[in-house]
Length: 164
Image (cartoon, rainbow, N blue to C red; front, side, top):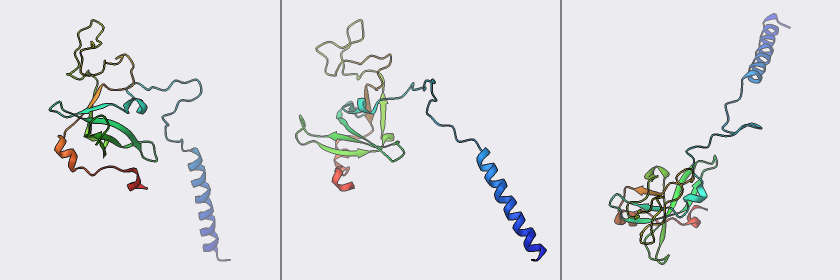
């Protein structure tokens, strides 16, 4: 056997061994999960189940609709939200899908809510639901979308069957 071939084979074997050793000693990327006995930091997170039904307004303070669904990609990141718009009491409503970045979530109560109790809750004369506990309610009060009702009509209707 030629000495050059022997040296080349030995070099390849050495590189493979070193590569495997380096790969084993490289620490894994930090994960967002807690280890046993460790508590995860979940401040500033929202429960997706609590986003369902959240009212969506525009900047002119017109109610556009409410969130009907939160759609996730295969990595668990929010891909879109489905908003039910138009209609009255569920009749004539149609769904549209918009990316999450089109919504601005607001923590303070919607301005149509009449807050006149010392505890910050609305009275029975309010046009909006009572504000939830602000200490750790896991959900914003409402969302604002920069659109009007006419612009929403131009967005194609979202149908689950169209995406199968």
